[in-house]
Length: 148
Image (cartoon, rainbow, N blue to C red; front, side, top):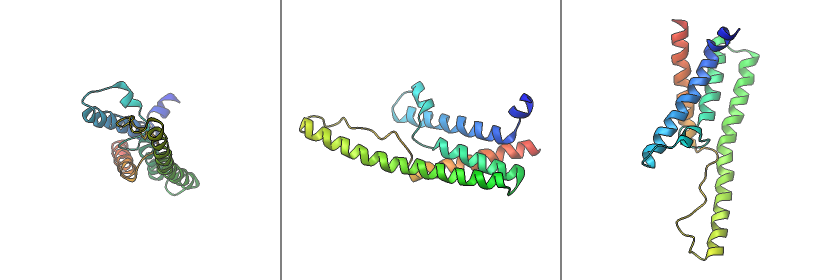
């Protein structure tokens, strides 16, 4: 049973989508901040969206493995909800960030400049787009290898 689990192309696609997207995030943030930090491997926000990459891999994997079934439709609906939520969380968090920064500015009368609440929740459309592309690419590669 364990062998079937760890060789399942759907599970492998999701796992590799997660690991590769987190590695890409770590590389991007390491270059941006001039140094590597382990927390970059666990970031929930940033480029690309790991949530989107994984649910895209899940849905495409189910489609390639089973075709259009009830499970595929359920996975597609689940994926669309996750993708909408990661974008919606970003919008909500941005609104909160703006309010917190205004409160800090009023409290400290400008002496708080340069230190702002940073948005670390959700994803923008570009991050989601590249998460979808990454999930599609990795799943396609896994299934090509699996069927060879």
